[in-house]
Amino acid sequence: MEVRYLFLDMNAYFASVEQQDDENLRGKPVCVVPVEAETTVCIAASYEARRYGVKTGTPVYEARARCPRIVIRKARPRRYVEVHQQILKAVESVLPIEEVRSIDEMRFKLLKNERARAEAIAKELKKAIRTQVGEHLPASVGGGPNRFLAKVATELEKPDGLVLIRKEDLPEILWELELTDLYGIGRRMERRLNRLGIFTVRQLTEAPLELLRRAWGSVLGERMYRNLRGEDLPEIETHRRSFAHSHVLSPELRSPEKARLVAVRLLVKAAARMRKAGYAAGSLFLHLRFLEGEDYAAFTHLTPTFATRTLVFALRRLWPENERRPVLKASVTLGHLVAYPGLSLFPAERKNQLLAQALDSVNRRFGPDTVRPATLDLVGEVGEYRIAFDKMPDFSV
Ligand SMILES: [Mg+2]
Image (cartoon, rainbow, N blue to C red; front, side, top):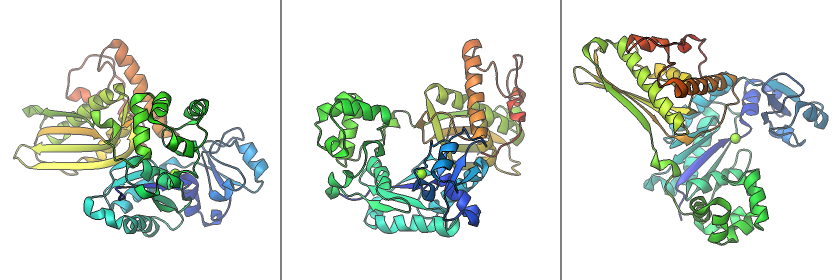
């Protein structure tokens, strides 16, 4: 069957950005660390470093022992986010993104008339990054009849790969992979599968449905079984596609300045609901209806986040500049949801995440809105204890 999805995975992303920005690092073993300390671990390793057995998770002292000439670079999260935005823009000049999965992964859904050209489109995606962002940022593009196999295909050739999995290649094409190369199999699940007698991907593809159900539970086990066979299943998060809030503004709130605060308030509420349900947003949509009847709409993809501050900054970028017209209605929508992604490696984002979680725990205990951005009191009731968290220094995440 035809290729319906493409998946793009930047190879050794942080290390590649360092090599892109500093030509002295190209072709050399490089690893990126979160802080300058011998006891910390590499969060990315260039392919040259991987040849020495240095990989994500290798402690710095061990990396030096394995490869004495390795270059250790401190991570530059803002730069990685900046390049990420450039990559999103470049690939969207070829094909709209279905979902930004993380800072170095994105997925595309092909329309019926695009499927026959999947390979050419995959090449165009890679070319767009090379020509519009940088020559030294390799990406592996995978394609498949479903989302799962498109991602798996990126594991088959690295770096700079291009592999399309077609239904007729199944299951043999998967047999060279390790179990943990498959999305949904971490170390824990690997051990569980081992206990059930499954040690290879070949055994997994030949195992009966019942065994997969025993490993993953009935719903996820059946999904894995059908995914491995190339069925195009609906996304699992479809039961909760977005969190949206909208508000019709009373006359005293219709100035663009006040309307912006209303939109922030809507966003703060939507983000809190989203966190409670255990999700992060991969996109933010803003819609304004002006009093005169016109509309304004803006949309942005995000590296999935549940941090209110990060979302508020994203909203600020979407807000129309120099808008003077009175606003009648404002709506914000958090979409492209992914299950809670865990705490970020980036200090700025991590700080925003921890702040959101801290505020949630106060608000859970003392009631909704007990702590909220102080500026929002200009548009709502006042009284309770306040923390001005949008007065903290601006990180453009
Ligand atoms: Mg990657």
